[in-house]
Amino acid sequence: MRTRPLKVALLGCGVVGSEVARIMTAHADDLAARIGAPVELAGVAVRRPDRVREGVDPALVTTDAAALARREDIDVVIEVIGGIEPARKLITSAFEHGASVVTANKALLAEDGPTLHEAAEKHGNDLYYEAAVAAAIPLVRPLRESMAGDKVNRVLGIVNGTTNFILDRMDSSGAGYGEALDEATALGYAEADPTADVEGFDAAAKAAILAGIAFHTRVRLDDVHREGLTEISAADIASAKRMGCTVKLLAICERAADGRSVTARVHPAMIPLSHPLANVREAYNAVFVESEAAGQLMFYGPGAGGAPTASAVLGDLVAACRNKLNGAKGPGESAYAQLPVSPMGEVVTRYHISLDVADKPGVLAQVATTFAEHGVSIDTVRQQGKDGDAWLVVVTHSAPDAALSSTVEALRGLDTVRGVASIMRVEGE
Ligand code: HSE
Image 1 (cartoon, rainbow, N blue to C red):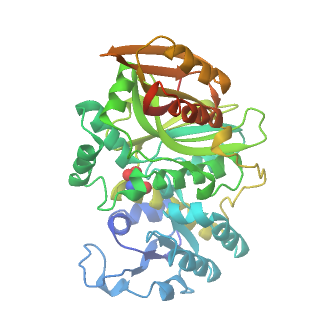
Image 2: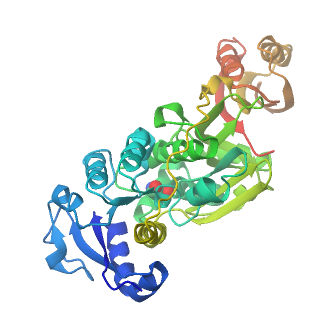
Image 3: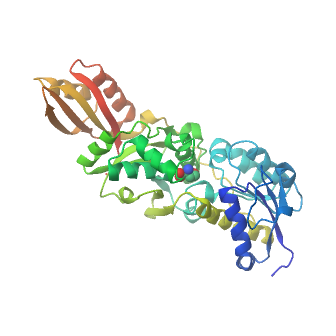
């Protein structure tokens, strides 16, 4: 084994960074044996230097992340600061100064992944980012390496733990969205500002990264159709239950049937209770990957948290260090397919629509005609009377999302429709 250590710079020492530092120290001998040389934490960049960080030598702590990232003696930079800037400048500077980079930064990869990949390529370094998607669950490496010889057609899953916790609570206790969010906040699952999770931005960034790798195509955050779960009511959950379904916030990346384009979307959807994703409870994540040769694979586990995210970071650190030691290089960006990303209107989906209507002759016919006029075929209709009014619950067959949403608009304009109580897509059948 080489005795001269490989040097690592850690940018950020919060929940994830401190776990990375702890495990690097606790498992130093094992890591050295697996890599073939010791790894030394050579610097830790933080915003608040006065905070006590157990297991981190105070002499290594600096507030000058830029100086640390450009140190010529650093072999690998671990970036766990998050956000776009200064993370982007720090990562590109690390590449320019000879380091490989391990990052957990989903927002930056989804916003500007190509810039990072190009900088890594230009300087002959590695860019690893397993921790950016679903923390400890291996997804990036399986898609990037294990499945590199296969053709992936679909990636579908639950990639946000906070929203899965909220929906699980709503489903199991009948709680409304606000109450379930409060519980998620009290238990530390939701952040003080939960926007990134509940509005689907976090899941959309992960969908962009997964779609890009799966389809060998550049997919950016803006290409991902995004709907959060703030509008989901206890009544929606109850309605899903009556249909033998539950509601999940899904990330869905698909290759079109003709193979000429792809789509990526994040939105709440009803899935049957018999579907394996329906049993993904609390803050767990799970992702299905469907490919031509392998068939259907399912990845499941903790998708958030300090230690699970650190597990993914350290796996990448070992890979980057091994490459440094052997003069090798890991996989670069693979975007050769350059498939266009189609808009949501072209995605073929199914809707579950709940209508508040007048209970009188001809209403059902009028509603059915509206669906027919938009080329949407009805699968099932259920009516529940209530004092001269009725609830009409319609589930459609598959149709382009644009046709379904214009049907809903037309339904809203009918005199006999008092209101569209809920609209939800149905997946997983
Ligand atoms: N906030 C995310 C989640 C974890 O709840 O899954 C980090 O992406």
